[in-house]
Image (cartoon, rainbow, N blue to C red):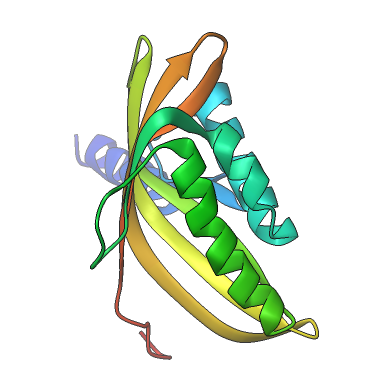
Length: 169
């Protein structure tokens, strides 16, 4: 009996220790228990690419026509065109500093049923000048995704920053 208990304990601890994020792309990671979803994962891939390329036009295709973008300390931005303009202003400010940005996501919770789904996660935004990282920040977010025809789009996108992580934490 004791040997069975020890064996079960070892197997349990091994399972806990092996629970790691699943890397979907270089910029998208899924926490243990979060399932892949090709359509929604593709939205994140295109989102990250648009950040790397500072391409605000792509954002019009990532959000539904009447999507809601919830930026902290600002009014709700409604509509894919308006959201694309908001990203355009941000990307213009990045360009004006001769910088580049990279955004990555870690999804900690996902539910998809039929044509509707949501994700809860953490994003990390890094800014580079001449290939050297000069700033990074993270935040938490929630998105609601809907399927329109054959493609998935964000219907609601809201986020808020998190405190900086100090070294050693």
